[in-house]
Image (cartoon, rainbow, N blue to C red):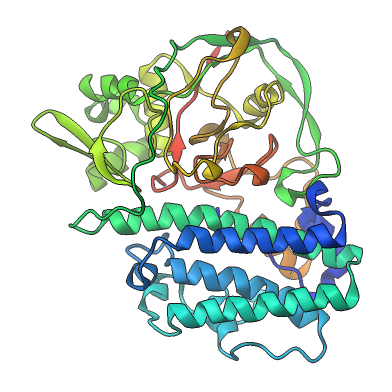
Length: 441
C-alpha cells in the first residue's frame, strides 16, 4: 500500500487525524534525526542491488519504477516539511513537484501514473543527489529549530510513508524482473533453516464483545481508528498460513476449473486472465517452478503460498470447507501473539516455512505474507476524513478494496502492528499476499 500522506502547513493542527500519536522510538530530537536517517539509508540499501536500467522500467501501472519511489518519498519531505517550515527553502528542481506527486489533487497537477516508466530523466544519479539535498536540509532544520510537536508528527509520518515505499520497491521490482526473459535475480538465494511445516491445527476464540482499532500513544494511520466495539461470534482460526503443498492439492483437484468455488468476478478473472496458479508460478513436465527475487526455483512445498488474489484465497477457503477471517477476528487473534516473524530485516524477501507455535498457538500472524481477510475496506464507525487535502489519504479509497493484515516478508517490522489495515483490489496478486483459514463454530 502506498502511503496516502499529505499534510499542508495550513492544516498542521489536523495532522494527528492522519497519523495519530508519536513513534515511541523517536521521542527525543537526537533519536528522531537518527531514525530519519536510518530509514532513508535502508531505502538506499534496498535499491543498491539494482542497475540504473532496472530502476526506470514500469511493466504495469500498479508497479512504479524504483527511481520514482526514491524520488517520491523525498518529495514528501521536501514539500510538506521543508516547503512548509523553511521560509527561504529553494526546491531542488522546480518540476520535481509535478513529476513525483502521486495522486494528491490538492497538491497540484502531476505526471500520469501509467507513464512513470517513460521518464528517463532525471537520471538515477540525479535522484540520489535530490535525496542527499533534501536530507541535508531536513537535518539542518532539526539542528536549527529543534523538534516541536508538529515537526515531530510530520517527520514520523514521513518515516512511515517511506517504509511503505520500501515494501513497494521490493514488490514492484519483483514484478519488473519477472517480465525479463533472462529471469534475472535481485539477490542471491538466502538459505533457510530447512524447517518442516507443522500440521495445521485450529485455535478457538469464544464469542463476545471486543474492542478493535488502534489504542495507545504509538503511531497509527487514521484508518485504524476510532477504536470501537464489535461483537464477534465464536470461531476457529488456523494455526498457520496455507502452504504451497496444500494449494497444489487445490490446483490438482481442478480448483481453477470449478465455477462453483468462485465468486462471479473471480471466475471472470480466471477466464479472462488465464489464471491457473498463483502469480510467478509455471509448470513444465509436471514440475512447478516460481519466480523469486533470487531468480527462478522449484516451488517449495512447506513454504506459505504467496501472490494469490482475494478471489483465489476465497476460492481455496471454500474448497477447503472453511472461509477467510474477518478483519475483526484477525485483530482479536493477533492480540494474543507478539509482533514477530519473517520481515524485510531478515533479508530473505520471501516467505519461509512455519515453525511450531508454543502451546498449540498461532504462528505466522506477522510477516511472511499479508493475509487476505473477508472484510471490505470501509470506514470504522465514527471515522471522518479530515477536511481539505488530508482527506485524500484514506477516505477516497474506501470502495472496491479488501483488507489484508499482518505484514509480509517485505514489510519493516517496526512499521507493522495489530491494528494496521492494508488494502488492495480483490484481483491484486503482485503483493506478497497469502491465506489463513477460519471457520465457524
